[in-house]
Length: 143
Image 1 (tube, rainbow, N blue to C red):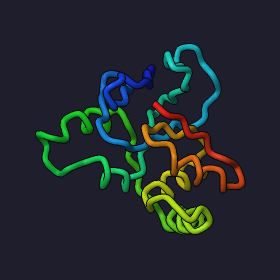
Image 2 (cartoon, rainbow, N blue to C red; image 1 turned 180 degrees about the horizontal axis):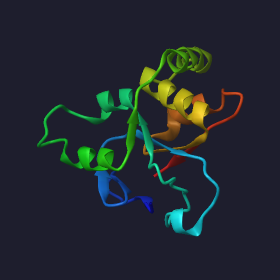
Image 3 (tube, rainbow, N blue to C red; image 1 turned 45 degrees about the vertical axis):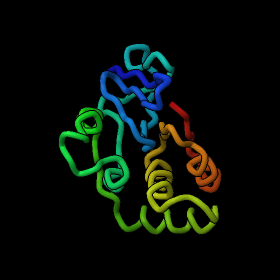
Image 4 (tube, rainbow, N blue to C red; image 1 turned 90 degrees about the horizontal axis):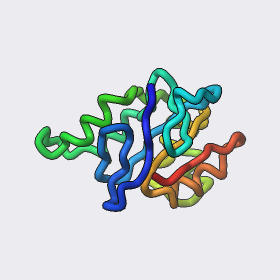
């Protein structure tokens, strides 16, 4: 699967042909480099697709299919995964340690820490602070 991640200058992150109009995060698991699987921005996209912790949907969606069309297109290219108790507990420790960031931001970093990978977001400020706390730092990239 080939996907591209870049900013289009209007506050929208473009991943493949799907648009994401609000700050949210995608996690690209680390995989061995492959020219076929590398996007134009240099991010590696595994065959399984980007991962999104299910709790991110609470920030990304509005609950109206007409207004969520672009988000749903993006989510159609992603694997949405549930957050289990160990990830939630790790997120609580990260959020407490950082002294900032939302619960969703902390869950994204804890989730990425567990699988290894790169977090793609339009709003990296709090995510980068949270990402410096894990034992194995998570990469956070602005798109």
